[in-house]
Amino acid sequence: MKFNIYKVAILITYLGIFLTSCTQDKEKPEYTYQIPFGENSWISNNQEEDGKIIKKEGVRNWDGKKPIQSYFRTNKSGLVELGLNLKSATGNTKLKVSLAGESRKVQVKNKDFQEVYLGEFKLKNSGYQQVSIEVIEPESNENLAIKELLLAGPVTSGEVNFVEDNFHFGRRGPSVHLRYPIPEESKKPTYFYNEMFVPEGEDVIGSYYMANGFSHGYFGMQVNSENERRILFSVWSPYETQNPDEIPEDQKIIMLKKGDDVYTGEFGNEGSGGQSFKKFMWKTNTTYKFLLKGEPAGPNHTDYSAYFYTPENDEWELIASFRRPKSSNYLGSLYSFLENFVPATGDISRKAHYKNQWLYDEEQGWIELSKAIFTADATANQKHRLDYAGGETTGGYYLKNCGFFNETTEVDTNFEREATGNAPQINFENLP
Image 1 (spheres, rainbow, N blue to C red):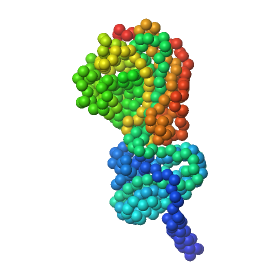
Image 2 (cartoon, one colour):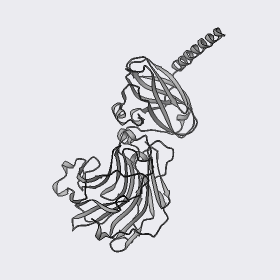
Image 3 (cartoon, helix red, strand yellow):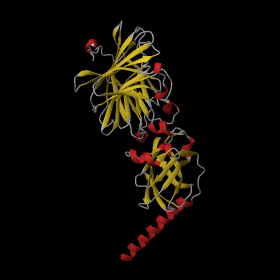
Image 4 (cartoon, rainbow, N blue to C red):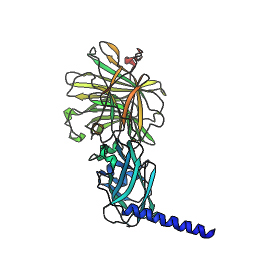
């Protein structure tokens, strides 16, 4: 009996060596796609480690202690062959590669960049595919660099989507918007009212849930870290630059007043202008109200003010009032958006609900905004990322993005919510 057990053990050992050898020795396929590894990979839930090793040129100095997930999207199911363009500092590394419920173990012996065949996998479904890579041996002192994920096989005869030459925005993920048409009867739209809540578990670090956007800025709330959240209100300068220091004095945004505990300053990199924010640990599953005011201040200026209502305090709070030069107008181009501003969390989905939108016209009074148009940014429109969605909910709409889910809403889809006829009860004279 003991002899038979030894024979079985020897047979299993030889079989493992044979299978590993077959994977390595099989003639490499002619790869159809060379997917940039850095632009399509993450070390999930570890911002610090992700930022250290995931670069535009690929993964660098990976010690293998945390697995890496890489993503691509197919419109077909079936067989796909995988490879990696990589190198190992030790020249003696064993990887475990998993895709669609199957795993392969691969030995990496090359110390220079080289295409290494990983094996054939069967994709049961079309849509986004997650490739998980982890180091089995050695357990420490590894230093791996990966340049490309390689694809071949029948699946690649269909459409394959991934991020290419768009490192920052591709890893951030697609931004999605709701655009609210202003009715023709509104000639002097002065206030824009919106309500928003974030469901439990959808409050991902790096999320900007923007409620009240307009032609010259935006107003909403963010998750900045585990311990910090903000209510943010920004107004763009008419001077086009990414550096606020370059703005001429006569085109700077002027802060007129601000609320308690509100920081005000300047911002850049997405246009430039005046910015204000209040640190506030807002909660999930709680509806917050946003009110934006915009009106002419003479022939060459526009004043914008942002007010935030919390059920905790049961009152409207001023965030800030700004004066913008080179314009004299009421509100225009009203919209909401959902975006991620931290690339390391671009592999995690997030969602927000927007409801009960109203416009107050100086002459017409309250006008209900019951229609919205769904749009998305260049990352979505160029098909670098297709994990974005929006739709109608009871009394409003939702936006969702990131996380490599397979729902994709067609851009320029028209939504219409049920009108309530219940206008906001706000005494404008009592606003701070």
